[in-house]
Image 1 (cartoon, one colour):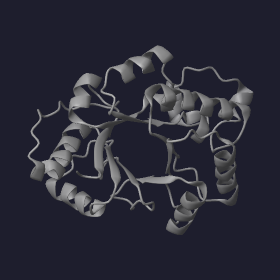
Image 2 (cartoon, one colour):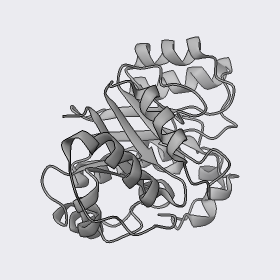
Image 3 (cartoon, helix red, strand yellow):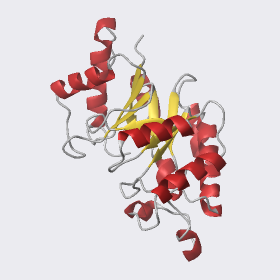
Length: 252
């Protein structure tokens, strides 16, 4: 059985249909505005017990209020609170945002939480100090992996060292850099942009990057459902698994 799990960043289709085709889903809504408890319970009930969720941490933790992603935030923040968010600052509003993220993960029985950083989060001493403080103070439930996706010019030795020190799993786009932790978590954003369709040669290259090691491969490009299906089928070819092809999906 392959140690690689293939899924999507955002389902883009009914969960019952999705769960017939992929074993894992990265939930995006938790980043923009965490869903209501009833919604999360409904999602968990819609899939088999073995189905796996990962969740993207609320943007208040990682992104400053000037980020364009805040256009999708419905929670009201005061001017004081807006100055306290993002960049792993351990402030009351960030601490509450983390607890909210943990609540979402618990309701979905999620196995991992993704901390996706904006490219503006650079490897400066203050930024690294904030990340260390966050990881020291943030409650971490047993059995829930903490994923970290640094973007921008982070040196490999810095990323690898922080992942070892803080017990983080390195999330990365495999066509930009390799994961630096034993368990790889790959997020494919599209080589030429969000509309990129991965060629057979590119998917074969991706399989070579994995080299049989344990990994999550999560497609985040717009035509992600078809690309992920093609890749998962290439991994399953020898097993002769036959399932109906998925519908194409827009952003989730």
